[in-house]
Image (cartoon, rainbow, N blue to C red; front, side):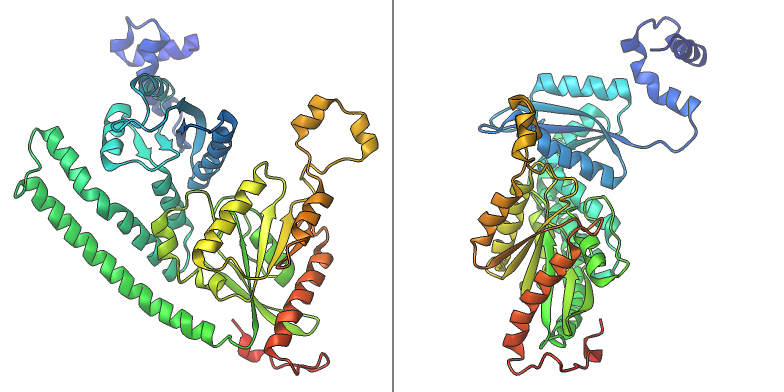
Length: 443
């Protein structure tokens, strides 16, 4: 600790006059922060994850990279990570007692604001951890739900997220109150005060869930009527892992001004636009991105929004080729599509961000590199990747960079060709020089 800061602390807080070491003073750093900085402080967080059997340290660090990005999207900064190799989480504190003390010491010393765990926690774990760490504790599902709530713009999206939050909370109430009764020294026996409070809370939450479901039914009915009016026109849906560039691609294709940020879940509300390529009209929708361990209640609550995917004639699966785990992200998206019953639709596989992806260099360039450099670079052979997907009859691969427009024309040609195939099934007697009345397709 800087000597001048130590002097200020000792002057302002008499109890520190005999405190001569960093450990002794660390708990007063919050007071010091208020003393020397009146500007709004960016919240800080520590990230915590377990390394399970058959998982590597690198894999878990990659997962924590994503969790750090989620934390940033929420508006906080992840400043440290803690990992522990354990077969299963500790029933009380998730991590072992020694690791918990390590986390606690770090939080106290650096005045951290929140702890974020990369798995779901039980209510009792959250309560114990908050009591031990003296800060706000998030699990992965609650973090994602909070992000969705902050990003939702339409009444439908806000209602969907609120419903998901209550559905997430309801089954946790009993365990939460049982833990509180034990803390108070009481019992959670039938008929006690704790049970009455549980039943009251459960009844209130169930009523809210019922009201939100009714509200969503009305919104879904309007959406169904709107989608029904679009029959007879090809419908295309952009899908992919979160933050792969779907909205940027949508802007390139439609020339619309759709929010495209380098943040996870920049798009929560579905956006539908009309596009005409080579005199063929079609509708394209930009849908919410998928992610590893997407909360089940969130998928269920967003089923009306995801109907744009289920009812699409063609999917454009956007992949961030520059991401080191792009293959894992593809697998997550494909698994989610299969669970939705949309895994057998024709797909245009867009390998995006080729301008920053580690493309395999020429043989001459490889000769000048060491084996270690080649291994570290983790190069991608674009040709082999294209061949592997081109062999699949229902998938058409395209390589491009939506951000700077690289191969946007090639992408447009592929989309036009695929949309034409589907359009000819809908309008088998359609003439290419025929001018269609598109007014009915305004969205």
